[in-house]
Length: 229
Image (cartoon, rainbow, N blue to C red; front, side):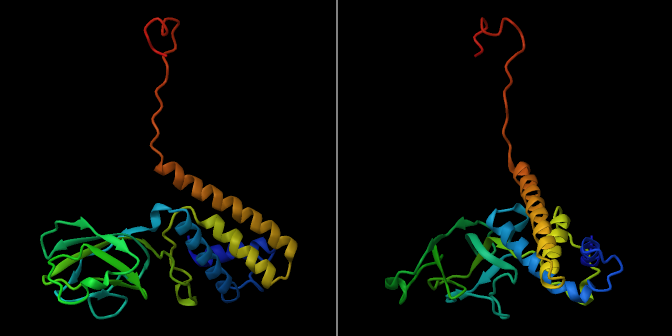
């Protein structure tokens, strides 16, 4: 499904099948608002599709920060929140978890001779580290940003995330009804449908993460006498 096809459905929900008013250009800002809302809902509910592991980030000896710079070492551009940070001696692929601190201990700031970092802090949107005297590798388990803003040039590109179409149709449709059509009644009805669609989408994700095994009792009259309760 493409954004253009979803916007076509949005127009139909406004009784504008020919898209005379609800054009791609008119609806795209509200479509992108709905995308941002969906991203936040997925992050809040820890939907697995937001989980990602970074490629190896090489940190040379003496380097004390990793940020969103274009010069390595740099963080993934789609990073939202770090779940776990791992380190390994350069090239050995022997990763151990690092501990997160609110601030790095100041007594480790100068004349430190450690070969691995052990701890890290998130300050000013950077990973802050104690300088090590050896080259190390980092890996991040993190929450990723899924949806790049849609433009007129990308309106015909497929949305690759499953189970989001109906939510986007109704949520973006509600925004369009309110702010283009100025129809609060229609907007309210569409918003209710969007909430129901989101509940179903999150429910599908939750069921996929459940692995509850149920042991059924034997259906026979003698099961009590056999010691099965």
